[in-house]
Length: 406
Image: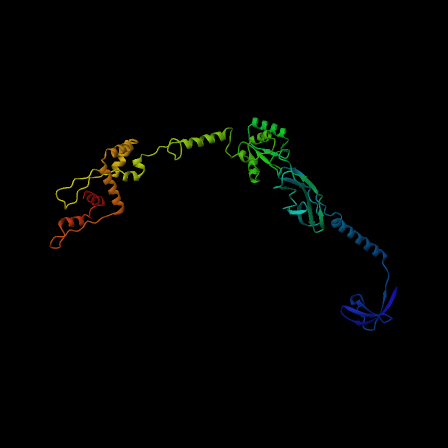
C-alpha cells in the first residue's frame, strides 16, 4: 500500500506529515530523505510482514513459558506434622522439610488447641520441637501454620494424649559409660517395662543413664538439661510399676540405701541421750553452792564478836566466808553441802537465828546507816569519827549488829 504524505514542519527529531484528509502524523526525521523541506511530498509504502509477526509471537510464548516454569510451576506446600514421642508431661513433634518453591518464608507457628503456642525458631533447619509442662493423661491438638510471600498454608491437626503414670512406653534412654554387666541388666529392664534405648542424645531422649560422669554424650546431655541418673532408677520404676522422680537417683546425688531412715533416727536418739545436753537423760546439775548465788546470800554469818571495854569503838565483825571459799567448798563437798548447811542451822541457838533474821531485815530496810557524829566539848569531832569517815563509815552489817547488841 502506497501512501503519499505532505511534509509540514521539519524538525531535527520529528517531522510532521499531513494526510490527504488533513490528519497530522508525526514521523521520525531520520527515516525521511535528507533533502526534504516543508511542502515536499513523500510516498511511503506500507505492507504487513506476517513472517515477522509469527516469529515475534513464538518468542513471546517462549518467554512466558520460561517465566511460568521458573515462578509458577510449583508453589509452597502445607507442612506435614506428626507425633514423634509422648511422655507423661511432654510431647515431641516433627514435620517434613517445608517446601517454599520460589516464595519467601515469613514465619512458621505452632498452635496448641487452636491457640498460638509460639513461632518455630530457624524453621528452614529445624524439623522437630518439644513441648513440655503438659498435664498427665490429657489430650492435646497441634497444627502448624506456614506463612510465605505466596500465601498461608496450614498443616493437618494432630491429636496426642499424654501418658498415664503407669505407662512407661514413653521413656527414651541414652546410655553412657557403665560396666558391661550393668548395661546388660539395664537393657533387659528397659525391655521389660516397654521403654526404648536410642543411640546418642536426641531431642526425644528423656533420661541419660550412666555410672560415670564423663564422655561426649554425657556433656551433650548436660547441655540439653536431660536428667542424668543411675541405672537404679530403671529398677525402681520397674518395681513400682510407674514412673518415679529422679531426684534421689541423680548421678551426683547422695546414695540412699536400705535402712537409711533407721540410721537417722538412731543418730538423733544418741544426740538426745548424750550427757551435758539440757533436757536429756544423763545431764548432771551443778552443785547448789555453785549454781545459784542466792544460796550464798542465805548462808548464816559467823558468830558475833563480844563487845570490847571501849564502847565508843565499833566492834569488829567476824570475818565472813568469801564467795570463792563457798564455791570451793560446795564443789568439793558435792551433794553433801546441803546436808552440812542443815546440820549447821540446827546447831545454832535460837537467839542467833533471830539476830540473823533481824540483820537481814535491817539490810533490806536500811541499806546504809551513817554513824552519828560525836563532838567534843569544844565542837570538834573525835579521833574515832574522823577515822570512820576516812574509812568510808561502818558497813551496814556493823551498824545492824551494834543495834541488835544494844
